[in-house]
Amino acid sequence: MKPAPFDYASPSTVDEALGLLADHGGSARVLAGGQSLLPQMALRQVRPRLLVDVNRVAGLSTRSTTDGGARLGATVRQAAVLRAGSGTGLLDAALPWVGNPGTRSRGTVVGSLCSADPGAELPTVLLAVGGRVEVRSRAGSRTVEAAALYRGPGRTALAPDELAVAATFPLDTDDTRSAWLEFGRRPGDLPLVGVGVVARVRDGVVDAVRMACAGVHDVPWAVPVADLRGAGGGLAREVAEVAARECRPVDDHRTTAAHRRALVRTLVRRALEQVLRPDTEVIGAA
Image (cartoon, rainbow, N blue to C red; front, top):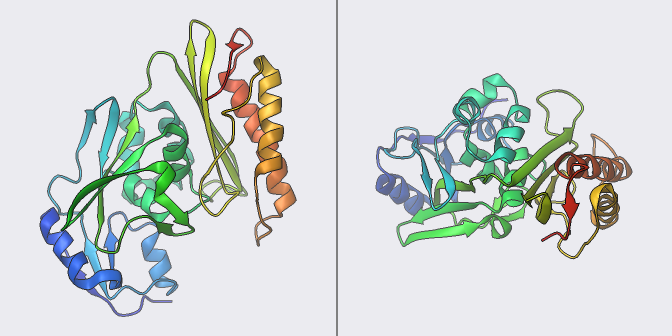
């Protein structure tokens, strides 16, 4: 199919882009990489009246380090981050699983975050590491934490007149360990289930664990590990059982809820076992 008719604008400044979004409200959509948006338009799942292409906007393609985080502008390509590394181990581990080399060469990190696909890798990574998105509108700027960003499939906390200008992922420290695992039907497809885990290990002791899953809820899901205590592989099995019990997958055209629940159990356990090595003592999870 072909997209429904639409107008096109290519602003050169953030203020110009914000003006277009404010003037057109919900009938405008932002184009960065287009790897999610353009197929949806071709299928007429979305029908914007105006496409605001931000690729010429000054300052959105920059990468920097600020306040202990890797700040990625809205038009930074996934392939560029994959080549150079981000300083956030979980993001670097997940990026090779995102799409394929062709889509990563055009797709942007921030664009994937704002597409809000609950089965996608990068929104889940942002939640697992406790990242945030910087948002601007004519009214001013604000920061949206990952835990507050997602409202449902394809829906975020951004208003129609707001533009996500950057995302920040906390940088790893010497005591950070992370792992990303996923299972899908074919390379390049969205995973049936994806799991990201980040642990803080100090002098052989784990004192913090964060986990998130893709593909099991209508938004990226934070695995409840805060109140668990245990040691070694026992903790991995315990968290995996809690995750399998608490997740709420559904049947769809790709697989069954029961299959997804089994994948959650297996992938959560394996991801935790990767970061909780046999020589590591576990005093808690937070």
